[in-house]
View 1 (spheres, helix red, strand yellow):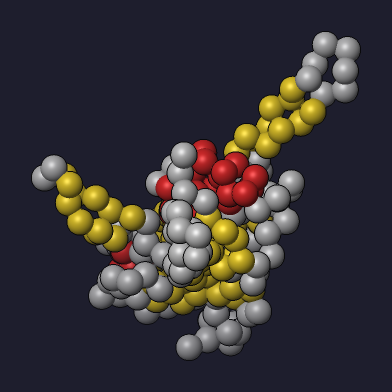
View 2 (tube, rainbow, N blue to C red):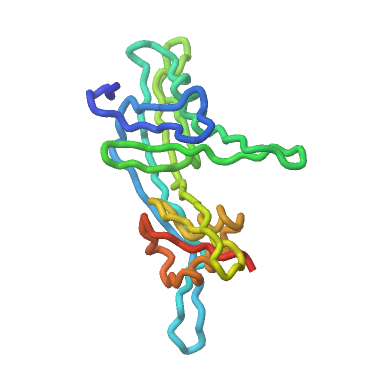
Length: 221
């Protein structure tokens, strides 16, 4: 498929373990641009006459913002809401089980692809604005804003016990998009415990993880 202008289209594809019936949306018109943002939270310590030490208290996630995407069925006279429904289906949560009769769900893992740019993510928000209608009031054109948030991934093999016994340590092989807080959330179910991993591996800067690195995951205290 190509866009209305004959270009290779940008797309969003469902790559979760439980894909929906509709798994891919190709854009009718490519974005004019996209914005990539990243922010962290910090705390200044050591005040009172001394130069403050700036401590990272929360490592943020990369976000891609796509504004003013155009979806159009004016020439065919078709209802554009079908394409809008396909986009919303990509926000459907992945059901992962039940606890205490309460359903649990994870965000649906997607891949945004545009040329050589590939971004594994989930949809944080979608805003659909209907801007053109037939004489009968059927919407045939929509302008859409989408915010995508980085989806960290990683393999987690187990390391054999040492000959001296003691707790078994896990080894995490870093892949693109991994951060210490998302790794801690996966292995400890608590993102705030990322410092355990950092200290155990002698990591002074949590932003310098490289794909292919292997991290030793210490047992919880």
